[in-house]
Length: 333
Image (cartoon, one colour):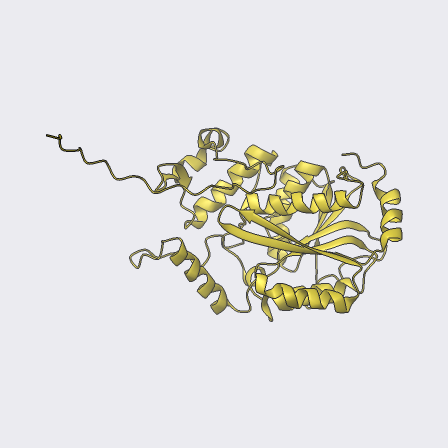
């Protein structure tokens, strides 16, 4: 007679491969060492929870937890001792922002015999840096690049300025208010300025209603749409100019491309994130009409999230070579 089998305890849900496809140089590979993060930023301990897979994490539906988590990441991984943003301003996920910078560094390398140009001779433009100033902080830490961050919001400029000054980075990161809110690059850049790359996290939505609907879809997909729990519109925060604009993402990127056509020799590689893959065909059509010499769509993936950026240049091969010899000869990898 066969002895009855002891029922097995229910298995925990299979844990997804977390951050499995981050760029190889991205510092955020694998699981986070929360003990180490809490050691450098004790306040994070208050927000650590055990996720359904039995692992330490934070509640990404809690904007305060996300802000404290970002602060701990910037301090532990990038040496940013002081970082904070005003309530309700965009608090972007650090690994994804770092990925963008690593992939665009590869694009620079593709124009430089495979060598990433590094150091203070490389200037980057962050279009719409926000109050968080994340791209300049990461880009300077990882590659030594100098940054100019632009913004239309005086409060965001003030917050970013406080971050830069409190970390002693005023020589590496400069900030500029775009006073003409109807323009992106025009009335911002000085005629003698040159930038080796530009990055941009454009407003993704055409209205606050669209942003709210997108957020609700995300909560449902994450299984957090519990009617008993009041969830924030967006766990990463965001002011109106950070999240939506007339015409949405496609309208903003179209304007950025058309304005870049008017300053074609001031930036080697223009680029912008594109949230919606469905916008790529229209964007590529606009790039063709603008007369760009070369363009690329670079796909990225952070765990379950797919993202991409589009990069373009108006410089032909001879002009690219001249730029490289003039500006990158002393920029060692």
